Length: 168
Image (cartoon, rainbow, N blue to C red; front, top):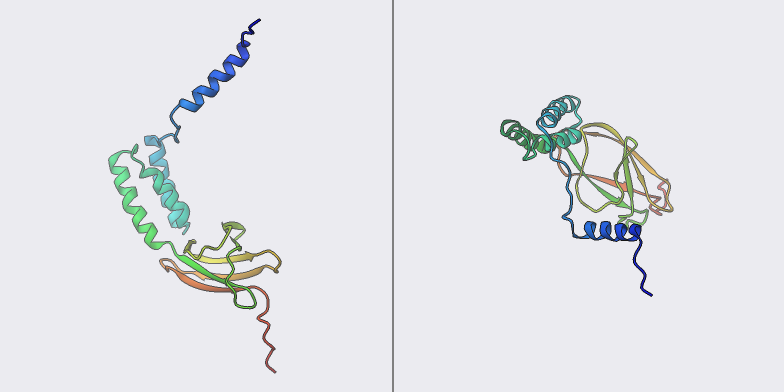
């Protein structure tokens, strides 16, 4: 005796097959209203020295679906903002001087990096509190004043003691 598949099993199989063969979906392109709003928000963010968020909004209004004049202006401003965003490179070592990469970095309570890769990290200008965490070591906190347009600023961070005797 042959069994026919149930209608539910057939529907599940059909849905699975359709998802397998359908082209990948992508995010919806911004509308003209979205483009205008992103451009306006980016100006406010820039005035508040929130350059990373400003860049994100400019990338929305620089989308191909945005009107040409808005897109051109946003693309021009992306270049300006990229030049103004400061970057830091953290040189993190343990007390013996060995490099560390398994270090989580937060800035003002927001995760900046889950791991140090030796590459520049973008940060907004201004005074910020950086917290560095690595397994088995007490956290290290540093307050830094970051200057606009400062690129690849090197900051040494050391966990633990150096093991060297203290000088009298």
